[in-house]
Length: 239
Image (cartoon, rainbow, N blue to C red; front, side, top):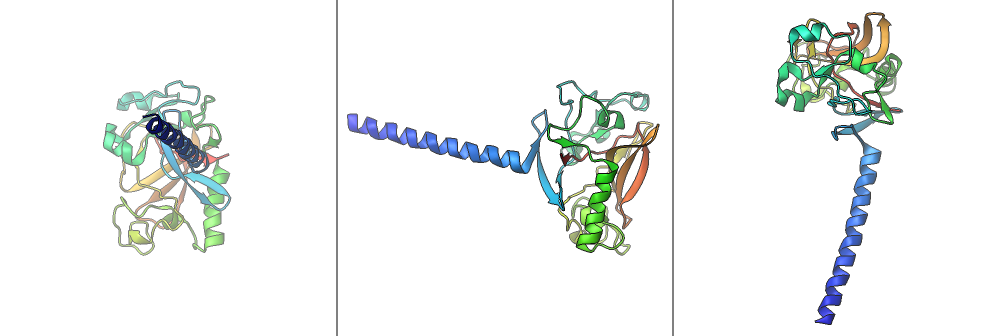
């Protein structure tokens, strides 16, 4: 009986050590290869050149200090926002799972910070660095649209080199940009499946900020000056 008890105790001890080691490995993996927001959402990452980007669009509902980012459903209320706001495209939860949330620029610029510690919203210069790396180092002539666009979910289009032409040739960078659409400053939703738009943290003028757009019918990454009331996707970049 005592012998069996000793064997059982040793088995538990070994199992405990094994679980601690496994847990440590998992923690290290999370720290090195993922980002976790304040809501507990986990994001994978990709390294392109010297930059580390999240693979998924942001979907947090809170600032880093725990304050809630208002979710605005009403078209009228969205158009009148002058503070940070977020929403899911067309209030469709399934689309939120696929594409993350849409944010106005006031949420991007809020001093409470929308990105987790160690991460931030890319500046205009950092977006340009990404594009230039793909063009100069990986040989994509003119633009990086197909290299950035995911090879799923985009509307099909016949034009040569368009993002929607032969999706199997997309995403050679691993960035996996999806067509999450946008929300106009007037509050209406549009273009899911057709375009993806992402904020930078850089103002272009007092009422607008720089953003990037990828379109199913186009072969370049568009640099846009977007009204701050627009609802666009967000990718994070490592500090």
